[in-house]
Length: 32
Image 1 (cartoon, rainbow, N blue to C red):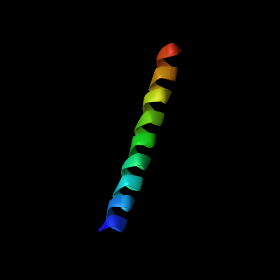
Image 2 (cartoon, rainbow, N blue to C red):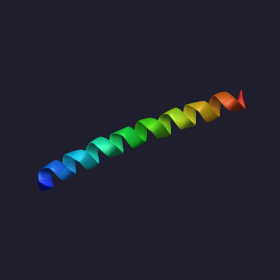
Image 3 (cartoon, rainbow, N blue to C red):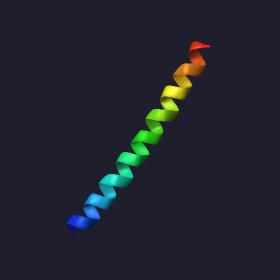
Image 4 (cartoon, rainbow, N blue to C red):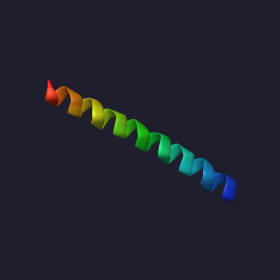
């Protein structure tokens, strides 16, 4: 179970990073 939780956390963190990247790119586009 612990392994599954860690995998889920990794996946969630990856998704969060992707969202942050998208947000940052959008902000950059807004500046332009």
